[in-house]
Length: 394
Image (cartoon, rainbow, N blue to C red):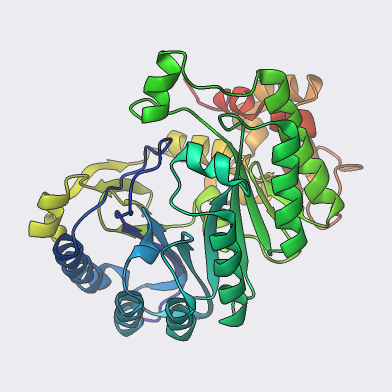
């Protein structure tokens, strides 16, 4: 049978040099032997799960963590060769890997590129060393610059840079300087997030004790505004709440998440969505290493109502919004048939609007237009959590 369904692959590498003070991701430091054992289990899972994917073509691969670049380049090379051997890939498959400065050199980046990686996501967070130190990052601004230059020399022409705002000790001016320095480099993509103090992290414990000097709400809001303004001025399109790209450089893998494309996760804690069923692997590393094929948990077939909810609150993260026609094709009804009062209320409040994707604007679209998209307004983006919560059906 010819593969005709598109599938994304996510691969979790749960290792890092040391855990950042704000991080609540599933990651930890480990010995070389522990990393080797994990990778052998991961390779086994990748190989044996291929039988589930005979009807699919893989259109994107995302290697995340943790810090995947902590591994030898040859392990990434071996992993991608294994995937190519057992899975059908589209000709233009997007293959991304997260890297942190201080864990890569020019040789390793050249190995990635030769192995088929065509997109890098570099974790910078700030261009100020004192702010990086406050976060518990292992690198400096200069190490990032070295990494970025090596990436270009290795042939990468699709690079994302992660930035964070509302950091301890950060000012509006220091954040604007970070943005300006990154913009001068012209990466193809910028992910700009505001710090969230997550429970269970060192930052949370410091916050509880009143020991975390965060910017006030007004300053944080100004940083948020500065992000959009400065990036738009430099030609970056805001295509998702926290993501900006030069034309044609949106992260296709992440857009797939927000549009509910099927994806299969490999590795510790990795989540999946296949055949409208969600599940994830265990978060216990030893259990995964001992039997990686026996660790799927919380297998949840999604009811039609849950599928509609996800389509709306995930799709509204995209500035393009939710296609009314695709919603109708998928569920046999329009969004208005299910969410009419919610949509009208938020339109009256200036939080939702209709627009045409092909026109690139949000004006002149009639409610009955089959090609219309329903999207958050600029004000709606500011209040996105409030709006999205209203699309959860009782």
